[in-house]
Length: 226
Image 1 (tube, rainbow, N blue to C red):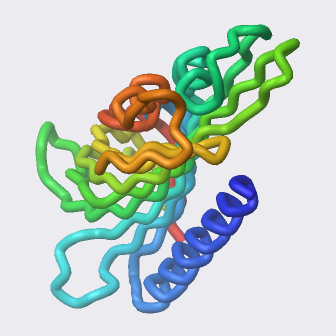
Image 2 (tube, rainbow, N blue to C red):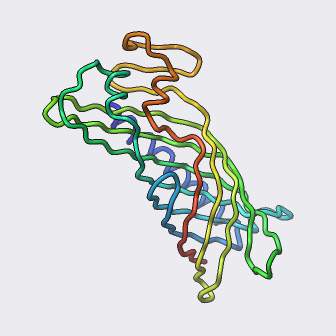
Image 3 (cartoon, rainbow, N blue to C red):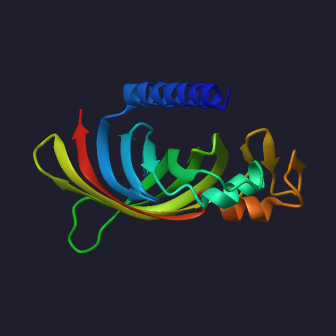
């Protein structure tokens, strides 16, 4: 059920982003799309679309992006104790991933003779998932959390041709604490615990799971102007 819910969220947010870009492009004289690779809490891949000059007198560009990252999910044995039981049998294997949806407003600045340098900032929405499989211990489970956040950064575009740019982007994101759920158990920042194990609380769950908090970003890629 959790994976189906995640799938529905991805479809809805992707649809809204696509609809926004279609509407924005219709009135924009500057529309571009890009792909980027690098680090954003882990090994990351980003696709984005950016529009400018879509509203008279508006001084900034608007960028919508989707980022997929692979990252360390946390402490396998602690996660098992907090969400499942105190068993320690089996050899733990773990994977972590994050879908990150980003809206940025970019303002061009002039510094170091760079022709296209922007400072940026805006809201974020993250969907984090930690997967644990205890080989030989007959225990497989997922822990997930959805979080709002915001970020700031900078971006420099270097023209390769009339339609293609090489892009460098860096910044920092901050995500708010949110409910951590898995295996019919959840821990909330407000102290609410559903089907908790022993006397564990939100701090214990947060310590076991590497949900996003402060994350540095450094990505490179290309941007194509339509």
